[in-house]
Amino acid sequence: MRTSFYFFSAVLLLLSCTTTDHVNVEETDTSSPPILFDLDQIKERGRLTAIVDNSSTSYFIYRGQPMGYEYELLQRFCEKIGVELEIKITTSINEAFDMLNKGEGDIIAFFLTVTNERKKKVAFSHYLFTSRQVLVQKKPSGWQKMYTAQRDKHLIRDQVELIEKKVNVRKSSAFVQRLRHLSEEIGGDIIIVEESEELETEDLIRKVLNEEIALTVADEAIALVNAAFYPDLDVETPISFPQQIAWAMRKNAPALLYATNTWLDEIKSSSLHSIIYNRYFKVSRNMLERAQSDFSSISGNRISEYDEIIRQASDSLGWDWKMVASIIYQESRFQPKVQSWAGARGLMQLMPATGQRFGASNLQDPHQNILAGTRYLQYLDKYWKKHITDSTERTRFVLASYNAGLGHVQDAVALANAFEMNPNLWGNHVSEALKMKAKPRHFRHEVVKYGYCRGEAITAYVDEVIKRYEQYCQLIE
Image (cartoon, rainbow, N blue to C red; front, side, top):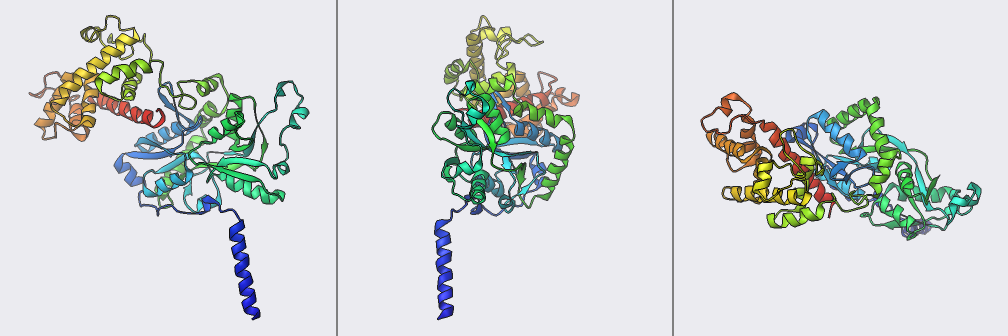
């Protein structure tokens, strides 16, 4: 009977612990088992897929150009290992882990805190830098006229003051785990409100600013950047010691981990890492402008000041306007007065004869230039539609023709036929035939009418326009 009593008491104790303790979402591993896909397979595929989030430091679009601390580092790492970079965005950390293990991504380049719980799921790189977690709260009204001591009376400066206070943080973030530990350390309950994983940390910071919530937590590096944007925020109260910020990979990808660590050690020992870090984490006029601009995916939803003209012109073409915007960025960086060495002018870099043919008398006028450029694209699309029915495939032929001229792409199709490649497929077929036109024995071939062509530059142009378009689609509604 005594044994039964102890057993029954133990069961009750276990049940009571289960029902009263909070379950940390991070500790509930629902992710898929990791696939076997390491550096050799990534190199064979020719592409590294990075999982990132959209924030003012990690990855964003500004005036049509992809930017960000993680983005710049990833680009350089891909150059080092000789592959292209593909970006995938998610705001959910748990989803990012699942995507990684399923093979939908190869590396997580979030602002990711290293924790023992996360080490059970993924392999972390050497840390990029360290950052504390800090409390984000709004300064009192009229704080500018107060002494520091007066202002501090209205703010939480001692972590013990967090007892019975609501703190809103993103579900499954490291902040949840830290606040639970802090509750134990200070001997009282902090009321942790777990917000949707779809919200960014910066979304919650803005909620504090707008007084929708009272408190949140952020990594100090991000908090300081946002406090510079919004001086009414206070981010001076730490709730943790410095923690490591690193990238994550599958545990069964040791070659990728080794290559990443070797490269990180190399770049961190140079001045380049400091330059990139300071660009996004040290406050400057450029940073403030980016954060507050309508042309930034952080705070706005526009690519350029010509978006409305591009939208209207793209309707007649039947293309997503963001593809035309990507072309314009590639051609002119949205500068309407620019002129090339060859005489191409304006936003879409049209030659005067082409502009006149498609209705533009003044190529420096943005409206005329964009309208003429999209009419030219429509003309090229109509031509290739007779040969290539698949619209996605046809777009590549249109882009190449826009960049190099229709004749050179017609030559590439003829060469593809002559060398038993598929004349209706771009990748590894017509694109390769176009590159062949840089060699005398090919540009002098009997089927070639338009002679020499730097096909490598044209195929790169097509790839860059499409890649940027895909980035626009992820960040611009």
